[in-house]
Figure 1 (tube, rainbow, N blue to C red):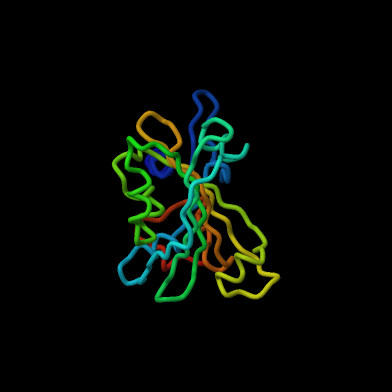
Figure 2: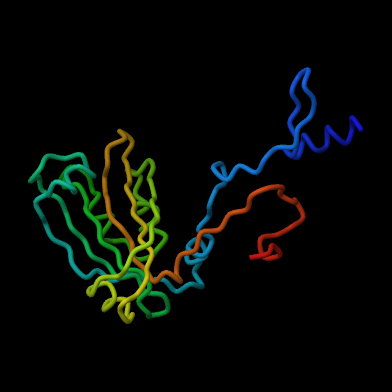
Length: 203
């Protein structure tokens, strides 16, 4: 019995409390990690991803841009619109704002990005330390639906990102929009089995 309890404890199935006994752990949804496996698979060379720049220009930061990039209201920023293609077909529409600093080659690095992986890694620049991603459901507006060749009304997913430099200052802020079928969250709660692969698990 003691050996069985130790094995269950090692698998994080039960917890022991001194003087109280052994208790089966509840499944904690709040601690579950969600993975964008479908998006990660687009990083592969077989995905045939490419980036098309639609627009790049200077803008004066409005209240929202100033807050996200932690710059002064009306400060100069770079606005970029891009279309991400998979095998020549539009898949993601990206809009983003970059801080304007002539001393740092952030703009050049962003404009030279030609693949999806580079965009989601903050252009792959050594200036990027970390990033935050936020995913939410959305309805595509007229421009988004037109560029993605979807009929309205169309449900979509919005993936917002903020990238930070090594001084923990925001470098860029933007968001990807895609058909709701392009992005899917996946997680598993409860007991994990070491010999079970993701493809073998029920969906």
